[in-house]
Image 1 (cartoon, helix red, strand yellow):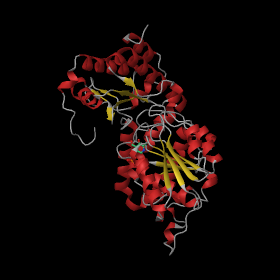
Image 2 (cartoon, protein in one colour; image 1 turned 90 degrees about the horizontal axis):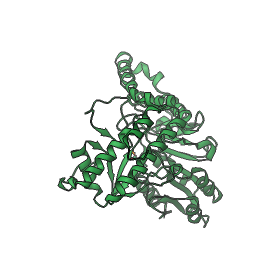
Image 3 (cartoon, rainbow, N blue to C red; image 1 turned 180 degrees about the horizontal axis):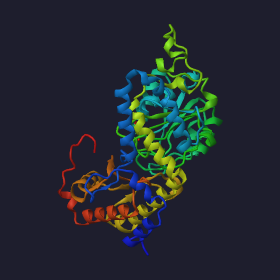
Image 4 (cartoon, rainbow, N blue to C red; image 1 turned 90 degrees about the vertical axis):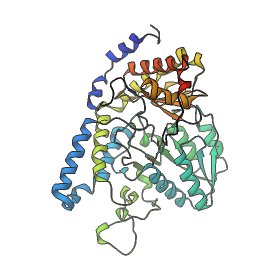
Amino acid sequence: VTALDRSAAEALDAADPLASFRARFVYDEDPERIYLDANSLGRLPKQAIEAVAERVREWGARLVTAWPDWIDEPARVGDLLAEAALGAGPGEVLMADSTTVNLYKLAGAALDARPGSGAVVADAADFPTDRYVLAGLAAARGVELRMLATDPVEGPGAGAVAEACAAGDVALVCLSHVNYRSGALADMAAITRVAHEAGALALWDLSHSVGAVPVELGRTGADLAVGCTYKYLCAGPGSIAFLYVRRGLQAELRSPIWGWFGQRGQFEMGPAYEPEAGIARFLAGTPPVLDLASTEAGIRAVADAGIGRIREKGAALTALAVALHDERLAPLGFLLGTPRDPARRGAHVALRHPDGRRIARALIERANVVPDFRAPDSIRFGLPALTTRFVDVWDAVDRLRALVETREHLEVDPGSSRVF
Ligand SMILES: Cc1ncc(COP(=O)(O)O)c(C=O)c1O
């Protein structure tokens, strides 16, 4: 059986131990549509509908008297996430703010804790918000933002990080665990080790790895992490993000946002800011309580499936996509933009093509396949294990092949949508 054979994909679905989890999610759109953009916005868990409705009812029934129950939700849901997907302990993870704001808080705290140092190391191929936030912090604190220029497909390795830290002047190394464009999975343990050897702290953006691959914050010794919940955790558009601060580091770091939710004895309304002892010092303001209800539902789906099984299926889905790329797309001018070693990639693949923007648009308009596109040339297929079938991968590649083979994509206006 070759990858060209659809029945091979059907057989993989028939043997899939996670197949039943699909039924936990909503598929209300056109049944012919193949949705491959859950790496931007994951599907709606059915459990979230009831959880949010219940929270709304509670709002109506109890108003402010429910706050004593709601106020600890960021820590409680953070602990759930820590155990389900982050390899972290209780009291180390907090749901809060957006990824961008959390990155600002933790990177700012790290720089403030290393006042004499001269540089932050980051990846030139990292997601824009990471690069921009770090550039802003570096400018404000008068330190250098030292960018790694590594292979755009393979991503940064420990060697490149060690070299960038060689002068001993680095306060912080900040990288994505899985790269948003290529899907490259960084070696968190090795990179954290070289950062520590150079006296730097390591901060990881887990947006594209949380809920897709096991993250082992405790075992790798990672100091700090942030990430979003609307991709593989299926928590909903703009859902609350999370942050991690290694327990041993919490007392030493201070958020640069001195908000009242991080204050010791918050409701004493004291005259001066004095941060909480533990992770709560990294809260800023009032948490979005409705949002935490859907976030918990998404985290529970991942917890129930088990991150190990999710990883296994994710690797098999991307392996099928890579095999199909090689057989059916490479002859049409595509290049694989994702590492070939399954151990070195997350749960999405990048298919590069000089006309990628137009092809991505044509996939949506003419082939009923929803990928996304990341400049300059990458069409991303996100393949979350809980909601993707092997036949979805097979059919999507088949439709993509037909579209480009017949040159139908050339009839489509690449478009001026603000998002795609
Ligand atoms: C690596 C990474 N960091 C951060 C973000 C987004 O941050 P925010 O939720 O603050 O917009 C994304 C969004 O796709 C991302 O891929």
